[in-house]
Image 1 (cartoon, rainbow, N blue to C red):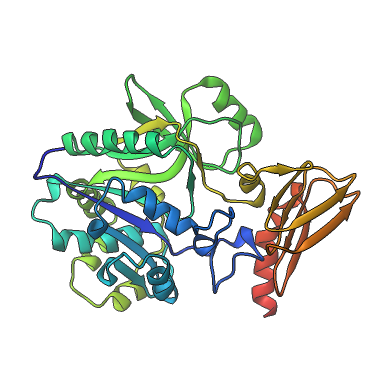
Image 2 (cartoon, rainbow, N blue to C red):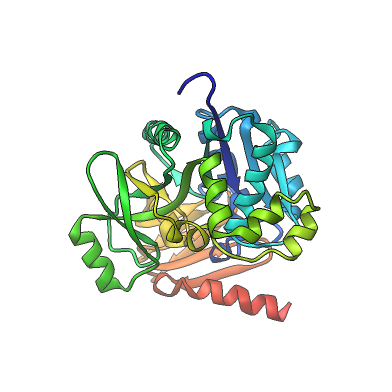
Length: 346
């Protein structure tokens, strides 16, 4: 990249992470947890990864106003002006439009400004390959008016992810269509065909390109954030819509890089277990586990706590100070339903 080109990063950190109850709560969502036992929260890991490619002064975090102070505590090196507080949840398109409006006010040339937008709670294990792919993406989006998404080469027919069909040769490929969370048979077909990748939810574009896309496809949101109105007033009247539905699926200039940098969205306890070492046949974090005739479990508890199990197989056991989850791995989608019930009850 030449000297007159700027790069920015937008970290989306407004989610609650309901599938990680009881560790993840409204008061302390998943992105603020050291869920892997590394000594770093997921948002700290995301920031540390991005700051290797983007100056700290150009990293913005968009979060719910409830979490502004928490973000500041986890990322003390981040300027308070770079923590953008949303007054309410309105999905990813308004979140990104908010960040775009701030970046637009700071740069001289939107056509020479590249932006990566990334969730705060994903895991990437191959940082070196991630930075290489990001460099390719930055250059590609500034050389053309493409909207780029980072696709992930699929390793299994997972029905929990969105899929992207692509065509072409080289590293930056043309997106043919998006498919959201297919049935298993369809996902198996995607994997077999070899021209599909998972949608990681990580995007790269130039500021000029994404502003133009909002003006074309989501004009009300675009006008609202360029109006100079108070953010609270904008959000009160703003449509709740994802960037995927609102912009990407309507645009013709969308490309994808089918990457392989050890990505996981850590969407469920089972997806987390792939990154936790096995101990006597069980994935454990924090707890000292004594197991007999027990395999395939995910056990999470406070460090130093002893948990003894016998005859338990393929279960999720999560123990916190005020709640405990015991659930078969095969039924883990029930956790999200449970959180809804708890909200109604409490």
